[in-house]
Each structure stands twice: as structure tokens, then as C-alpha cells.
Image 1 (cartoon, one colour):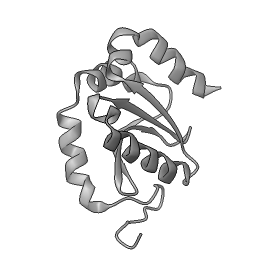
Image 2 (spheres, rainbow, N blue to C red):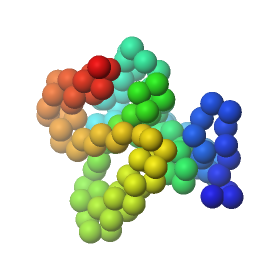
Image 3 (cartoon, one colour):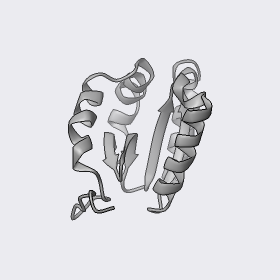
Image 4 (cartoon, rainbow, N blue to C red):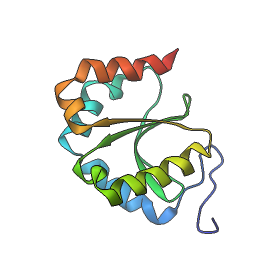
Amino acid sequence: MSNLKQGRYFLPYNPLLVERAKEMRKNPTPAEYKLWQEYLRQFPLKVWRQKPIDNFIVDFYCAKLKLVIEVDGDTHFTVEGMSYDENRTQVLEGYGLQIVRFTNDEVINCFDGVCDCIRGFLG
């Protein structure tokens, strides 16, 4: 934990991930781009893209809802990917965060359902 920087208003994060997060913002996957441009950009609460938290970079993060939104591609469905995501989820939930996951396919082909699911977290 010693490599993590504690922000005044943010969860701890690894400062070495900041540049990688910026690159990922510049080069989103098609599904991430669609979700951001067509929905999360105008979400009623502030949503961060490619946000470093702990030693991870989450796809989208809404601090007010303590919600992490992940858009998963094929690498997440390998044995290694699923094990990594399980550990990552446990660490993030340790900060009191909720994690919701969608596949690239769900975002591209079931977009309204994805948006409805995220909207449901508004209460």
C-alpha cells in the first residue's frame, strides 16, 4: 500500500498509473467510446473515465454513487482474466464501491438496457 497516493477527495491510487490512464482515455475501445459519448458524458452526476483507484484503472467511476462501471472485452473471460477481475473486485469493494460489469457486446447491442441498469443506481 505504500506506493499509493492518498488524495484529499479521492480514493488511494498508484501515481504510476496516471499516464497510462490518460493514454487509455485517448484510445477507448469502441464500446467504451459509445457508452461515454452517448450516455455517461451527460450523466446527471460526475463520471470519471479511466480512473486510477488503488493499483487499478477502472473504466468509469462515479464518486457520488461509489460506483465503478466496467466494460469487459474478451481478455476478461480467460481463466487468468477472471481470476484477476475477482481479486480486483474484492479490493475495490473493500473501499465500499459497487462494481457493475457489462460486456463489449452488451454495450454495442443492448445499449438501452445497459443505460437503464446504470440509471437504476441513481435510486
